[in-house]
Length: 316
Image (cartoon, rainbow, N blue to C red):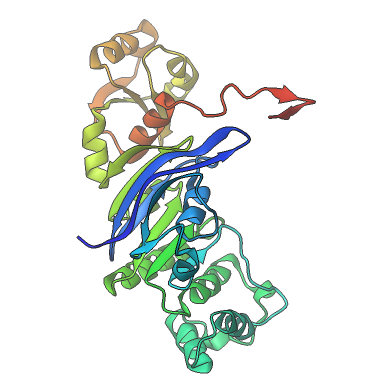
């Protein structure tokens, strides 16, 4: 498989702490790779190193066949990077914003490129509308149009659907799959489990290190996680006591049920054998889902800021 991203040992250190620690990542051309992790896990820093906005303190590799350190400028010309926050101009229209981006890339046929971007994202009818008046979903479309205007081979999308309604999120992901079908590689960071499930491959990251990688099924199966479901009146009241139980890695409510996860089935059965759990409750083994696995992985991961001390009330 041709690799659009092939990096090893990427490391970034701030104030003596590794916010990205020895990240090794390969993404095949035309694949959608989900970068799944909580806030502060190092996703954004990794993405910025991949597209040449940050220089790694250690590590090496290639993005689109170009060296991430020596050829960072060339990488920027072939990558579309969509930031977490809307980064275009509120007081310019949709078309004016796209014209500005097209000028930055010095596109030779600027008008045609803008027309294509407007058509591709369904923005033609709104092209004169000021960006500042757009809803979250339409701002998202404009940001994606700006990312695509120079026909990049790789899209780096940093939590692109934060604050967007479910329909807009669904439409966005349909567009991403259409782009991947055209051969564009996509690395998208998210902390939404339903979005992660729509990716071809997943990389789970926390505290600057990779916890698991593979397809959704591979990650779930390799976790060897044992999960039990508790249903019935009073199940929700057991969330706190179960979280405090030794050996339990994850406890979460799913509708009227509570999922309890651990690696040791015998230990978990003992925890669930408490008399308080035997009254009017149904306790059955169930299949782990991606959220069960991800939360359990984080529970076992080492926080790279766990020993940070506070100076004048501010965490160092």
